[in-house]
Each structure stands twice: as structure tokens, then as C-alpha cells.
Image (tube, rainbow, N blue to C red):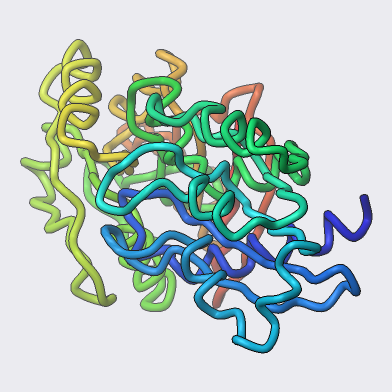
Length: 313
């Protein structure tokens, strides 16, 4: 089992190389290991519409090592596909190559797979082990899993606040992010499919919501006019195959998502600077949203004088 975990970790490392190119397909890594424990092939899903991780892993095996395949194990972070899409089924390729064993990180939630790839490989007489580092493999493709299992995009709530918990100054925007952390915001936007702000924020600040300080594509823009439009926007995201949504609105917009239990991650940037001076009150300033009780801090970053904390459910 320790060896299985070791090679599955390598699959996850490889998969991350396809973060940008594989979208909207999941990130997948594959490693082929000979009986003596030597890696003889590895690959990842580089680009949507091109060869999957298994295809690239088999293609990387040197001709002089191909005779080792019948006694080898292929590790894959996500269940091999069992349907014809832009490429043929990977489960058929695995069967054709005749490996001895297949180790799968997690089952594919996509309706045309969902265990069918595993079933076909087993029916061919190949041993299959499922669930090695399952949680890590699911986390790798959490956007993909949420999209297919919950029929909505993966939702990231994001805001910046002063050290005393305010997000504006008497209704006026505050420059809380530093130049570096602002660049990180643009990086985040480039990694997600869509972005949303509330009507008031849109009218007051006219945010561009693009990635001008990073490379990549800007997310699709949404403006929430009324709270009851949330489901409508989420449905539109699903219909347009937008797998993730950043919510960058003001307190009312952010809190409406929290109150509706529609969130998957929360990113809070806190400045070292306080809005209030000793003895002051800011009755006209807006307090930051309330972090849900079921939010678990899993990552903390410090840049310049600011701290960024990430929460997950």
C-alpha cells in the first residue's frame, strides 16, 4: 500500500502540469511501474481534445521496455474513460497493452464513465485497485467533481478586509491589497471560469474583473442584481459548462451565498492596517461577512504586510 501511495502521489504531481490546458477536462496523471519498481512510463493530460494521461504514459515507454508491460502496474489519478469523446476510450488501450494491474485514485463522476472503465478492465481479467489517495485525487479535481455531482460551478468567495474587519470606508472602496497580492488575485481569476459581483459594487466601483496583471483568459463576468438571481446564474454557469465561479461582491452579495450554503472555498485577505483609530467608530463602514462555522482553515499565506487565509467546507 505504501508503494501504491508513492506512485499515486507522482500521478497527482504530473496531473497538476495540465492545470490550464486540460480545462474543462479534469487534470489526470498516469505512471507505469515495472515489476521491479522502476517507472518505465508516465504522462498527464496536457490539453483538452488531445491524448489523455494513459495515452501519453504508454507513448513514453521506450521500445526496449515494452516487454515489461505484462508484469507492470499503471497508476491513474482518475478512472480511465470508457467512452468515445474527442479521443478513444483509455480503458480499451489499457486492456490492449495487457498490463497486470491498474491502480485508480478515484472514480470519474462524469455520467458516461462512473465505474464503467473500471468494470471493463476487470472484465478483461486485469486486477484493479480503487481508492488509493482518493481524497487527494478528488481535491485535485474538486471543480470537476462539484460540477458533475452538484450540477453547479465550484464557488469561491473572496474578499479583502482591514485588520479590524471592515471591507470599505463609509461606502468608499479601500485599497487593501498590495501590488503583489493584487497580482495573485489576477492569477486566481485566470484559473477560474467565471466571476460575479453585486449590482452596487458594479455601479460604484466599475470593476474590470480581468487578468491584466497576469497571463491567461479573463473569467466570464456576471452581475447579481437581486439575491433570488443566484440560482439562475448558477444554472447558466452549468449550461455554459463553466465549472468554477469567484464571488467578489460586497457584503450583501457574499453573505447571501453564505446564508444559502452555496460556497466551497473562501479566500480572505487581511491587511495589517486598521481602519479605526483609538476611540473611533465607523458606523457607515461595512463589516466583512461572517465566516461559516463549518469552514475549515487549510492554508495561510503571508505577503508583504497582508495575510491570505483559505477555508474549505
